[in-house]
Image (cartoon, rainbow, N blue to C red; front, side, top):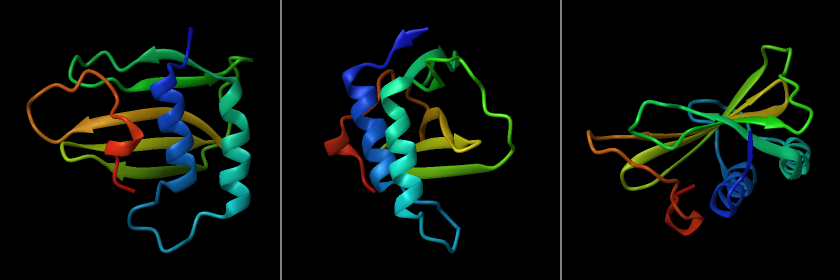
Length: 117
């Protein structure tokens, strides 16, 4: 396990605050966003994707506790070259994914200023 980098933490904060759910006709409640944001201070990186084409990271709270419920929310945003997805399972952020649209690998997460919400 390792701590989040400044870029990863900034991106998580922005995704929780401004990410949207694609194809879902519901607005993310402010109370949900506040609850998820309150958990970010205790999140660490548990592992990486390992595919070699993206910087996606597996997130766990300091307690190393995994969520037990199947309820899932996926917040989305994008850059000019990739989709950015934040998975929230059991009411906790669990995975930050950057999915490149082309064949070129992307080795680090974008700056928040380069993300379209």
